[in-house]
Length: 248
Image 1 (cartoon, rainbow, N blue to C red):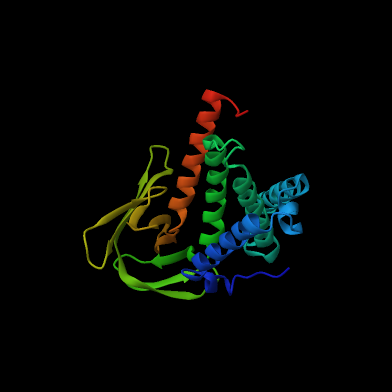
Image 2 (image 1 turned 90 degrees about the vertical axis):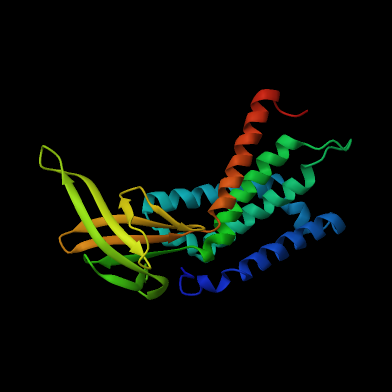
């Protein structure tokens, strides 16, 4: 199986945004001008809907049971996601308005929300990354390691000024805390599962503490806000569907 980990970042912003625009424009043009062509008819067929959903669900199950997260960057999974998004886009283009000209808002919210949530993860994946820093108390650095072991130079200095572990009455660790500074700024207190939002789409996590120091994780996901927007649209569509029922 061919994995694209080494070339994935090549498709980061602005190339991913350009490719997304080209993809939408291409299928919108086919829908508008060539509705009778095989590609359009197939993407709107029950076979395309069933196969795209089935392949996506089977792939998710494979990732969940096997634990192979790198599968999401395989050519096979990328093709499946693009296939599913294309079917969703064509269904949205076909069904957003009724024959009498009335806009189907529930239909738009549900399908556009799902498309936006999937698209944020798909098109935004090249812009996302995780970095780890293993630091001793008092250490100051700009170097962090990617998951593949390569070194990334951060645009800021991180300094671990202090860390502590609280022990409960039964002698077990119950609370982990680290204090860091960014470019010698104000102290930042980190605890497990409570990250610090450094800037747009970037969070700093405390993931481990030992006698030697702390392990910090920097997670950058700038497209997650589009995913949140898609989820909100899905919820709004579901609420309208519950209140008013299915459209007839």
